[in-house]
Length: 236
Image (cartoon, rainbow, N blue to C red; front, side):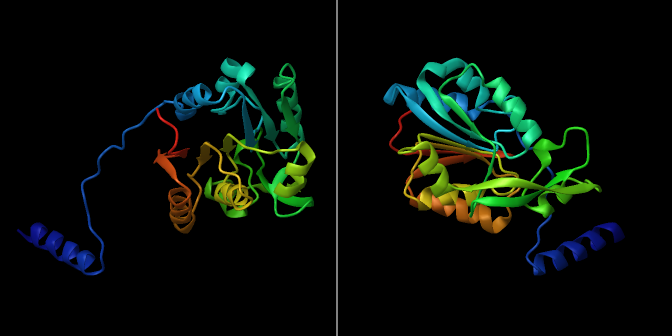
């Protein structure tokens, strides 16, 4: 009886402050590569697609775009951005046989020049590196180094590679994803497919990304890690 009364008292206090306790249910997991569903449908409507990948890493490890490129290389051309020099070398090697894929050793930022990136001091911490220190510390790393990398603005990138349209935008920028997508859309590009890592976005950025995508005519689905957004003119 006493235990039940204590539980009720605690829950009443929590309810008063707008908090609710509920039984934990396991969140369904999926190993489906969402791009593998969306891109083939897009190829049916447009044979030659251009993609922009921001945060390409080595082009293979945990890369949802890699199997798509391998399977549909005759339909795809694009640009892969990776700022870390040692990882960039692997990216260039892995895509050396694809003449229609260009690799850019820069981070997409507000300006051209040099900026700093935060990297965990571990054997291969490249995919945990970020322009935002709090994203790296959130992973629990105690030793973090600050390195200087090259940056390129979106207008400069567009001019350098003569980009006129973006069909697919793939972003894995460790917390900078919303900023990248907003830059692309603000310049008037509306990719048919946008796929980005939403795991490290804060609540305000998640809300802003949802509002922006809805306003621009996108349908989107979110997993525990990523978001896939598709222009609603596409039929699956």
